[in-house]
Length: 81
Image 1 (cartoon, rainbow, N blue to C red):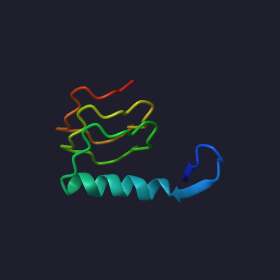
Image 2 (image 1 turned 180 degrees about the vertical axis):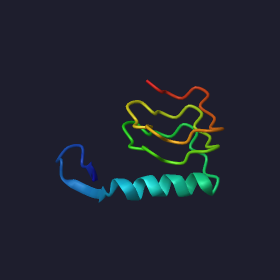
Image 3 (image 1 turned 180 degrees about the horizontal axis):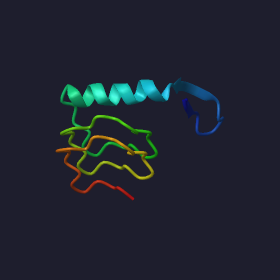
Image 4 (image 1 turned 45 degrees about the vertical axis):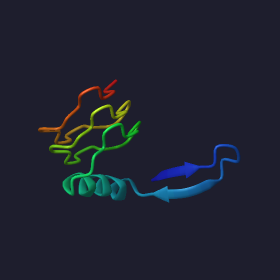
């Protein structure tokens, strides 16, 4: 579960199921979404199909890309630290 919290009060603003987020990213990529410069810091993209995605300049720091399909993806300037 991914929780987005208020930066001052720490109250939960919304929550997302990890599998739902992964499916949304895969669907967006399949539909031609441009993730150039996206902040995917710490995202769990394990097993995601990112075939041909434009991830140029995306922040993938600490992202879990294990088993992700990055075939043909544009990773120019992406932060893969």
